Image 1 (cartoon, rainbow, N blue to C red):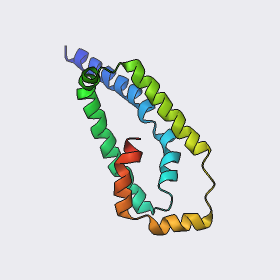
Image 2: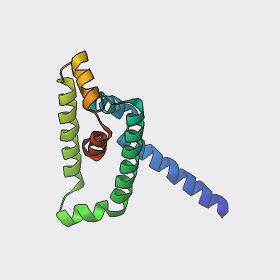
Image 3: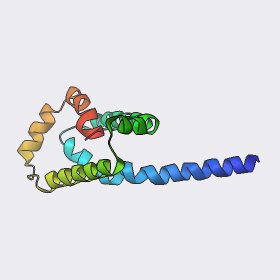
Length: 130
């Protein structure tokens, strides 16, 4: 009896991890994070990464608990959400592909202007919730 409980719990846990890993996609988001925080110090990046991780965790918990209710309240079907997400990914990728190369002067200017306040303002949008 107890072994079945552990078996199903472990299996469910592995299923959740296998489902969430492609959605969150840490290796795929890393270049975007580095680009959007160009000019920030390593300590600022660490603090910003922790804040983004907490924001993503809260958003995922809210989506699991209330996502179906919100979608049905607004009359939005899951295929529409998939199409909109695909369009968002294509638009973000297009912006990254067409970005101009940063000069050293531009990078130095960003480093001077990148403060912790700006990092906190960017922590939710666009880094956590594009």
